[in-house]
Image (cartoon, rainbow, N blue to C red):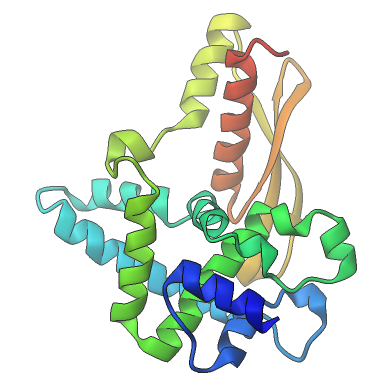
Length: 227
């Protein structure tokens, strides 16, 4: 286990003094320990909001609050954190139950995103805001070709609606198929239907996020010529 942690620490660029912190950050609730990563995830979410908010405030000095909020929303979300978690290969290190692992847990966007937030929360607790800022902003800048409203905030729902109206003469329908978890960690499963046929399904921390992810999948299907 220590070798695995050392490998991850090298990828992150930070070595924990208190190994219990990183182990907690990597422990999914299914692993059935007296602790899990949900509290650190809660903290990491707030830390990332602040770090990215300050970064954008300085980077885009002439942008208004609405534009800054949209850019931040496109970075600080499940899709954005899932991307960074995969860069760090977090899935290899998360502690899961056998059942969750057999259910594809190591590849689940929500689980990877949560672990990334928990890891950032753990670094913040041990080393403070400046250290986690250097790590998080470095990851964001190295894994996005461009950070701007045009490149990041693609409204897939609008794109899908334009496609379906042109091709079928109607608008897509989104349905919430399931919701899971306590209020502060709620996840929504949303499906998108076109002509009563389900085209895509996705899970997100809000209905809007799940709709956008489902719309993106459906757009790729339609553009690829699949029906």
